[in-house]
Image (cartoon, rainbow, N blue to C red; front, side, top):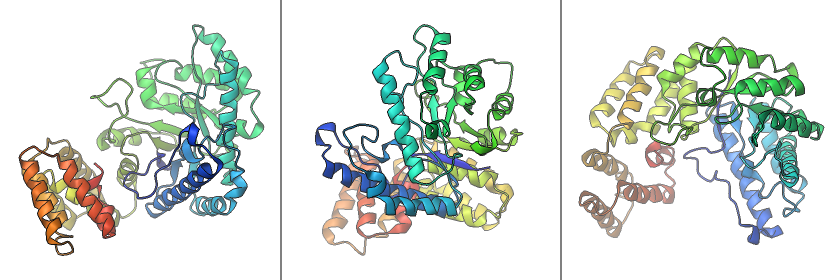
Length: 417
């Protein structure tokens, strides 16, 4: 059972996908951006390998204007060497990748041009996965689309337009229930007529349920019947609701007790894609909490990432976790993450924030000149007087970490959460 995350690796330097405006989309610009993005993808894959993450959703932004005639580059051949290198890493390390076209890829639209563009976009996504030499267990996830006042007809239109797709797209396509229009029952009905596998999304089902009388496990088990051997292991999406944002928004982090209950109740051997704001950070939390391996090395590594962030919340919690790690065993992993979740939920305390900032500054105070030392002192004073936010202090320290190539600090969650 693999647990993964989508598109963005939080805190990983030089891993962001670049874009450009249509008016700037010259061949040279597109070539430069494509090269940057492919190298960024390789950094993400390397990070996942290093952190034992075997499931990852590749950003649709990998190739700028990838499905548009604006991009005339023969990028699969132009970057064949780089793509082959990533492909080898994916295969060797058993990483399952996927892609998820955005909200404008609507296969059942009433507008013929929109459908044409959707088909082109799906072909682009398949080309990316084909160029990475992945097999058909590496999927393209798609929502059904709009209802247009007549769901039954809209579903039939999806089925008809699906038939027009190229075989390499059909081989990879899976469909997912959404949070507004198409329930899991609707999607399963489409699957019966197309043999397209179904990805079950627990949060979407909570917001747009087929029935409130059956469990997640019931729908996961039902959806499992749509997956054939060639499709690989059944895949589901897992997320939690953000209570502070509009309905349907994903949580900032995966609350580990809630996830562990969900995980422990699973009867199926499934791969789980997390959809959450803090991406890889939650993935590592969930992987560690469900692992049967000796967790001490992984948790010590996690603590090195969290320590200054926790110190910025509470010195008492910082000391408590350090003591926990002295006699750590796997039974204490939930205590570790529960403590972190509780502390990160605390309101900002200036004394604790300054204490943590001064600890981080300690890495640089003997490397910088008097001008920079005075600048740091002024930032602290301005923060105390509400002239600047803690974010400005963190940004300054982050720049110093980059300038001095301090990998230990650059790996810290202190700068990113």
